[in-house]
Amino acid sequence: MQYLLWSNAGFGTLRNCKEIEDADTRFDPTVISIQQPGDDAPDSYTNIMSLRRAPPKNGKPRFYTIEDFHNAYKSGTLTPSDVAEALLPLIRRDIAQRSPHSTSFTESRIELVRQAAEASTKRWKTGKPLGILDGVPFAVKDDLDVKGYKRHIGTSHDYTGGKDVETSWCVRKVEEEGAILIGKLNMHELGSGES
Image (cartoon, rainbow, N blue to C red; front, top):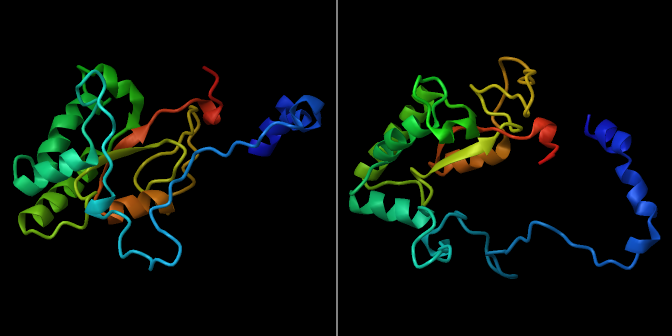
């Protein structure tokens, strides 16, 4: 499908433009390695020493960071269940009084969110979190496969592909660190990014 759309739009012809022959190649996104040559592979890439804080905007934090969640759970001021219950009313599309934020989500499996939050809360209470991501909420775009969720890729067609769909590797890896998937996010039709 991607090849068809690429060819149909004529994107391949851009390679023949003489104007871009001398342009420097740009590779996005920029990946900053946390491992140096000669280092042993870390047991976990979600080590507390890897945390970086986003710069504040107008002297105030722009959003809650992984470090904020980690510190709140560690101190006991909040639990992952508290955070999940605070987020659910904001993102749910299956309730009468939807929040403006709910349009960002295609769906949220409330029971799965609560189960993951409860499991994380228990780990924090016993002092055995899986890492710095344990209990941190996250969402994924609708183009990724997630067991228990439909996959529409920004269309009205269901591309889920059957009952035995396995969760995408990247989502599984974040969940294995204890992060809580709160739902799937809306996207442009087939990722076309028209706006």
